[in-house]
Length: 93
Image (tube, rainbow, N blue to C red; front, side, top):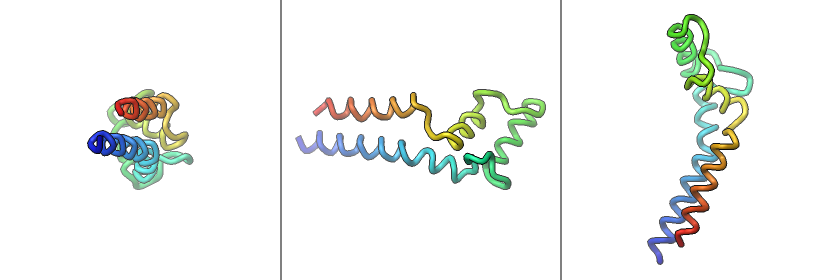
């Protein structure tokens, strides 16, 4: 029983860290609501992607997805997955 509670607590903590931590880390890398911040990892990634793609950043690329998260937060689908994992872990008790 204690092992199950520890597992459930771990799953809950992991879901909470993912729910809050991912947007924080993405923002710290330079992907912000105002765009990509100059001189950051995000700017370097965007530059490399633009050079590789002839001057543009491809829709759906890593840079585009991270900028979307930086501007608007996690998409609803990602939030649903995190909640579903937490619910499945809870059902195991």
